[in-house]
Amino acid sequence: MLDENKELELRRIKVQVVSHIIDRIPAGWFRAVECGPGWTDIVLNCHNELNAIDPEYTPYQIKQKYGWLRYYYGTIVAGDEAKKMLDIVNKYERMSSTICEITGDPGSLMKKDGYFRTLSDAFLERGWERVESKGANS
Image 1: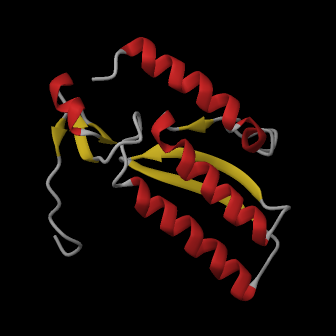
Image 2: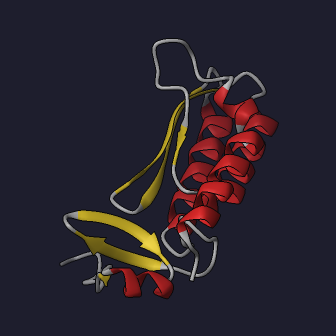
């Protein structure tokens, strides 16, 4: 089980690792990556793949929403390259639904007090409850 001091240390390390992405978020936007340290690799890999296609792309908002990563960005590329960028973001957003946002371990969608996060089973001990998937048509 991850204690709160370890969580804080992981968050501090994450900020250092993603600071070059945060620096690219334009003025007027909240300049932060608003997700737990367990998704640091997902965010970095997504950024690196987007950057390989468009080194001038602009990240606007990177956050956890309803238990999944949301990566909002802008680009001047069009056509196939823009489609590739969208596919990259979709890939990493889907990936986030299987990785604990805090620890980086395998995870699943959980809820507590109306909040949704993707967390490892260790968080069941903290009062989080697993959300059962009902499929795309439910």
